[in-house]
Image 1 (cartoon, one colour):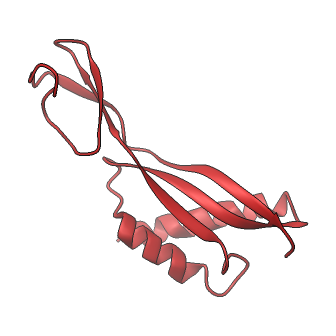
Image 2 (cartoon, helix red, strand yellow):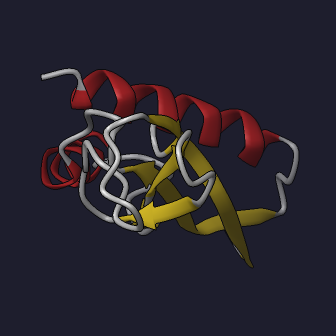
Image 3 (cartoon, rainbow, N blue to C red):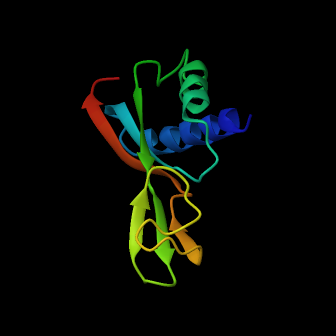
Length: 116
């Protein structure tokens, strides 16, 4: 269950970022999670909610967004965005495909508010 480790790393990053803005409080963090990233979003959300309490992020909202799989077909050369893993091109049905995105876990945005 590596989601707790990921949650810990996300909170550590947030601590460093909040130190750059001591007069503001992090209100929301939006994460972009690739469909092929191997992250169980429900478990990550549970881990974030568990690890943030008590502490400076107790009131911070963590929003998780799925990032689609980007599939490039070597046969028809089309790129497709999919929210499920496919082993063949949805355009021409070729199996000669390459995954070019959808494995990432990124902090998309951090929203600050005033007050501590």
